[in-house]
Image 1: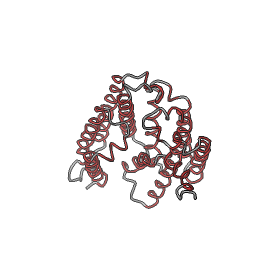
Image 2: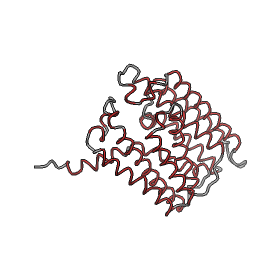
Image 3: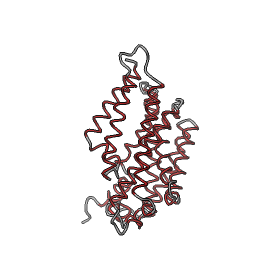
Image 4: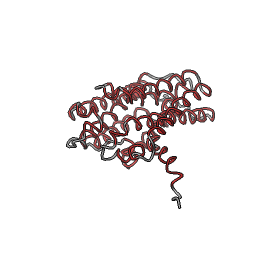
Length: 301
């Protein structure tokens, strides 16, 4: 008699390969509309929900194809060997086919349901990430740039979909903030695999980066993010009728949040940014305080 779970083995494996835990990153699509105070209308909320779904599909396509390409290398990794494709739960051809389908479908639906610039940005994301999977992840420094650009595109696409002008300081802060998290992730991976004989097999470039260089990257990016945010907050202060300068006060929460995250980066345990954010109560509390302060600024209270 066949086990009851067997028919669901492949679909569940595909879902796991699509990284549901990392879909939280796609919530960045609301960043630009939130900064502009454009989240209150029902039409904007529905449009952003659609953009979130499309970006999630595009990102899932990249994860599926990446895991299919890296199946052999992942089997040598102490953690990645449990991924469904590396473990044999999802056949490599199936992962390729599912990824290719989503990679075509997401930009096509964006062209039909959103404006042309949104479709172009999503297409650019898919092309760039596939180039990363095939080649760019093996190019020093450029691999960091591509992953950072992926986060930046997430933050941009919500504003693009709603035709909201994107502030230069918003882009600078988001870009450096993304590089901070990417650099911390790579640094943590390098620290954890420092004594592993399979270090070069699990992520080839880790054998070419030094931990000192990766530490420099995330520290430089942290400083850039803080500086960019402070200039943004000071340049675009809240209305003069506001009870307190909420946006300027939000700088405190932002800086404390960066310092808190840097603790985990310095310890070399920031290899999974979503786990750091979701499991640390201090970071969650800081995020709530920052959201409240920034929300009061947008509302002009």
